[in-house]
Each structure stands twice: as structure tokens, then as C-alpha cells.
Image (cartoon, one colour):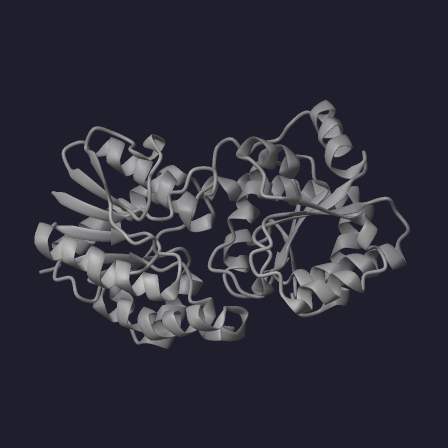
Length: 376
């Protein structure tokens, strides 16, 4: 078979959630299926590390698609013209964008549709593009894959897609995320948090990640319980809004907050493994990979009781209402003072993490590919 793949998010040292999904699944699928030929479509110079095997042919199509107008040009014209000329058996798009002009079968991986629920969290032009095109992509797709039952039901309800057209392909976790020794933890804490324990957030800094209430909850925790605990924020200021900036500036304990920016995989896994707890409380999430990363590192988790997060964490995390600052602060205090609760959550996380792996994800995505190809 000839399978063309949208790989524009495979960016060296800049992989985000969907980029990691693309990397981990395609690496396994291409190596496991040498009988098929894969064409990877990039929108800029690519790193050779992303050409996973001999059955992969990389092609660069311009322009670089990093703006709504360029999204449209790249997918509708550059990609659309290529697909109609090449006539592959399938076009796979791990970030959900399709070409409405293409005539081949198309499989879209739509991770979530947060922009339908919280449109103001997304810049104006991007929001307009998403809300116009993604319902059309969903209807155009021969088949859809998504990363949780929550997202599947969301797509069904908002876009009117029949449930039989959607496969759930859960995310996995890099096997490099694992527990480390007490000595290693002490070294990381000395480097990251002046030798102190710390609560940890991992992810892009954008409104739906609920950074504002995390700041407020940490302030409340520090006021009610005197301690040297820090709050470490790992991630880029993707949409550092006026509201987020104001919330930070109003903190009484803002000097106890550490911003690391983006970390390498090696630094990230050590930073997670050395944390007192992962405090990951978005008010909307299609999956939430950091939850798995923390569980794999033997670190307790506080996460939200909304959207996909209870589905991913189940009973292996403290679930809180992400809109209630006091509830988040109370959970932070419980984790800090109750060693028994921390141990209980770590043990439950060790069991829960076994349900997820990138090997399983790749196999599920391949099954979705096969299901798509069977459709007449």
C-alpha cells in the first residue's frame, strides 16, 4: 500500500503532545510494516531522525504551514494537489487537518475540539479556521481516530458523526519516564528548586491549562501551610495572556515559582521524577500525557475531574474541580502532609500506567488504518 502522512509537526527538539503522538506511532508502524510504502509530507527542512526506515520517502511541500492562511494553502493546494496526483491508498493526518479537495481515503486523528467549548482561549484567526474547517474535516474523513472516549463522544455530539466511524486510540508514554534514586532526586531538587520539594506543572502555558487557578491555589496553600515547597512550571509561554500575567503578578508567593521553559527529554524525566506531586489541572483536555509521565516516574498526581482526565487517571490520582481554587489548594496540602496518601496514589499509578504504552497506541492506530482501508 501507499500511505501518505502529514508529518509537519515532526520538529527536531520541538515535539509537543501531537508531535510525540506522531513520532512514537509512525516510528513503530513504519518499522513493523516494511511491506508498505510511506510518504512523509513536511512543510520545511526535516531531520533525518524522522525518516524511520527504508520504506519512508520524505517530501517537502511549501509554504510552511504555521498560520491559518498558510494552513489553508498548504492543506488545500500543496497537499491536495499532491494527493490527487499521487493517488495513494490513504492519507493519514495525525493532527486532524485534512484536504477537502483530495479524492483519496483520509484518516484524521482529531485529539480534541477544545476550541468549540472555549473559543476565546484560542487566537482569533486560528479559532475561525478551526471552527470552520474541523467540522468539515470530520465529515470529509473516511474515518476518525481520537485519543479518549471523552473526545469520541464530543465529536459525535458536536459534529454529528456516527460512533461507528470513530476509533479510540489512547496515547502512550515514553519508556524513559521512570522512577529515579533518592540521591538523583536530591541533585535535581538542588538544581531546580534550591533543594526544596516542589509541586510541578508540565505543559504549554495557555488558558485552558488553568495556570491562573494553579497560581492562586499555590498561593492559598502557602498562606495556609507554612513550608519551603516551590511550584515549578515546565513549558513554553504559548499564549501568555494578560489574565495569566496578572494572576502571576498578584501572587504573594510568586518568588516561590520557578519557570524552566522547555526542557530536553532527559531533563524533563528527571524533573518529573523528583517532584513531590504533579499538579495538572486543565479545565479541558483530550487526554493528558503528563498524567502518565508522572505515574511512570512514581510521582502522585492531582488532576481535574472534568473531560478526559478522570478517564485517564481513574482512581490513581486526586481528582479536583479545576474551577475551585480552594479544592485545588486542599489537595496540594493533603499531598504535602500525608505520606500515606502519596504512597497510595503512587501504587495505584503503578498499576494504571500498565494500561498505556506507545506500542499499544501504534497497534490501535494501525487497526484504525486497516479499518479505513476496508471502507468501499
